[in-house]
Length: 270
Image (tube, rainbow, N blue to C red; front, side):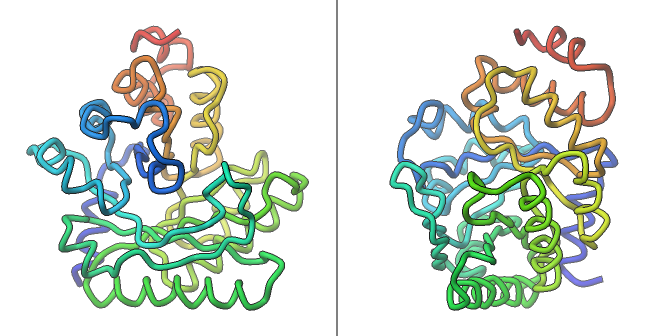
């Protein structure tokens, strides 16, 4: 058993679904509500199985996450221009922020790199694929699992069928390039086809803040029913009135321990 397989087995050892808290939004949006104070945010998010953050925030929060039952630390390697929604960027230009070795030196347990293809530019597609493959190769050499975040460009203009097909193909491409786990959009009733065609565990990303906690829990339930291994929530967690309670509610819904109403009531939500 090599180092990567060892770490993956440990990360996936719990038979329940995974709840990952994302707090890396500041790398693209600055200090948005819920993440103005990163230390306070970490205090609220450490109930998750893992926390995703940009590399520069690790030094500010490491002491909070370093407890005996602290969450796994996932660090983002690649910066993607599309995530700067406030500036209406849409070309999915990807650039490396740090190497896998540098991420490990910062304290990362797992690394994450984004991938976008079918951007409208063959050159951008090829550059993005090459960068992701390089990250995956580095991770394999160091025995570190890598999450492939498949986030297609132009999702806001796609029909449901177009999104489904893009995600179905893109997730398989990311796995073929070396991803150990995939993070991507939930595409609806056919998401089970995405899972079936992807030979590694798939996590659903929460995307925009839903109007209510109930809506977010509904997304988590649908994702679990479609075969997702877990969910990655950002704003739905750190902008909740009770982030820790919300994490517990999500975990209950993902694992089928009661319905959404029961999860909301048990955790003081709504």
